[in-house]
Amino acid sequence: MKRILIAAVAASALMAGSASAATNLITNGSFEDGTIGWTYTGTGDDVPNHKAVVIPYNSDLTYPGGAFGEPIPADNSISGSPDEVGTHALYFVADHSTESLSQSVNLAAGIYTIGFSVYVPQNGFNNSGNATFMGKVAGVSLANFTVDASTPGTWMHFSGVANIATAGSYLTEFVYDSGLAPAGDFVVDRAYIVAGDVVPEPSTWALMILGFGSAGAMLRRTRRTAVTA
Image: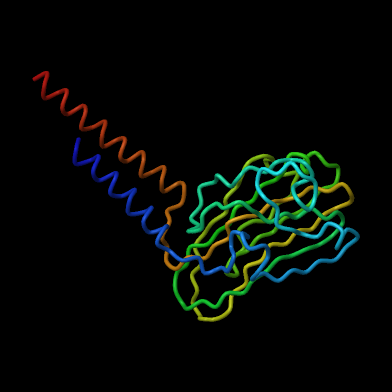
């Protein structure tokens, strides 16, 4: 039993150490410094009146100091980002408008772990106007969905692995396309590119946990049988 417990702890420590020691190749991927490092574009009826801004977590203020009175909780999704959760996130909310925030990163050929987190506020979900969110990292499309098709009030994490065959500049971009007022809105946080395939997917974690649990159960059965005999 002791050997299995040590193996489980060692595996967990190894994965945690890999993530924490990694470097996020996206500048200001957690938006703690506003939109520094990002390029903004926006057109439509509600730009610039309600252009995308960085808001603090758990704020009950209206725009631009919050999500129109709805406190947004800190990102609690399972993320491979090496960045701390921090205190701020990006907020898209302009009605009948199209906006994007983008950043190009120079990458050498190789494997990279990529991802970001998205949250749909409840008040935006309840609005009559729909909106679409698209997110890509290192040129790889990871998410494309509407407010109406989402689960509000829950942080969702989108991740993957980018296999860069040719060194060059690769685009990370978030695009918001909204309908008539009042439209739905999105909150984005912890965008990252990390060299290597360093973080297991949630399904991998589940298999690892099941594996450790099965091994422990087998050992317990073996020990009980030995005692009984």
